[in-house]
Length: 45
Ligand SMILES: [Zn+2]
Picture 1 (cartoon, rainbow, N blue to C red):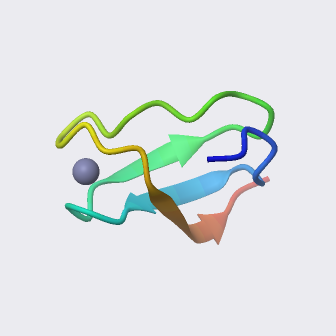
Picture 2 (picture 1 turned 45 degrees about the horizontal axis):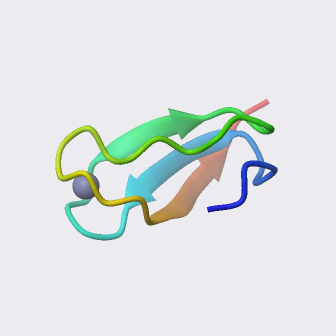
């Protein structure tokens, strides 16, 4: 996942867990299933 993806709430593509991403920070693996594949739910500011 690109660390420069916009800040927002992201949902895990595998298990549906939602976590916050801050633009410029590396994506952490999902805390529930360990996969690192996310899609954005909504942007935050
Ligand atoms: Zn997950």
